[in-house]
Length: 364
Image (cartoon, rainbow, N blue to C red; front, side, top):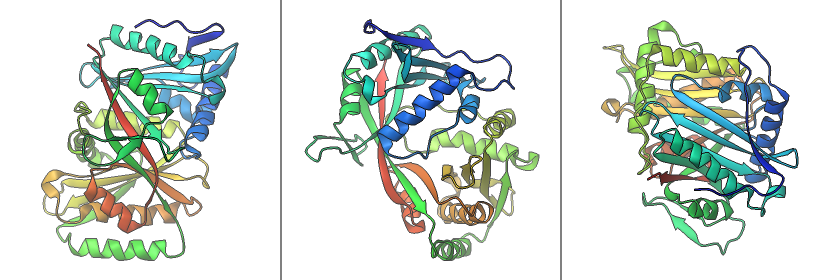
């Protein structure tokens, strides 16, 4: 695939400083600024915006991911970004791809040309499958819809969906973004749900820690993290199985800390065996008044049926509120077909705020 960028447009590789303690360069600051502007333009929210310093630690490659980034420039002005995140767990055959432009740069052929160049890089690197996650919004009620092949959810055929279809992607799954907004009754509701879940989980106890992960829990946590890639619903996306060990957990913790973020892990531990069986993650940046993020939540398949999902979510949220009382809300994402987890979220008080399409393209 070869499409030439229009006159005045450039796809410039984002160069990172070799020193780990180096601050963000002017190029990284421009990249972060345009990323944040696009997020607000696209979603109307700033939940996922990051300062240049916060973003910096997420840009570099690791033993598990080969990360490449480009700034899209138009007449010297940064107007977009591209990212290619190659997963090394399957030998580099799967990659996550992002191509995003500010609205003022739309309609000039920049997006298709930039995507074509990134796809060429992916092919040359040995990637055989590209995955993309994009929010979709119903700007017009009359837009036709694409049904998820999972049978759960749909996405409007908006500008983003049309772009991805033209590039050869197909919709594989729809995920729901949800938010829990704290109010006067939230804590009491969570406490009641936690106590009810605990009554059904007599063989388990709750354990919690903030990063860095304690040595006594690191192996069990690593095993549960590896199961996120195999047990969470992913339709036909074909997510590769991830290999987690203590070193990978330490790398994750270090990168989160380098961002200046805090993370609390709440886990359910089997009393008799000491096995960690379920977990929930909550995180926040340095701004105590910013929104919080609920990341991974999982109950191991061999321990389901004891309300452990409800237990770790409610216990985690209650402890989180005590630590971060000024954070007004918590956001999270779940596959639309993941009814057990969505039911827990709904009972807790999460309500939908967005829908995200998961797209796949096979490179033949």
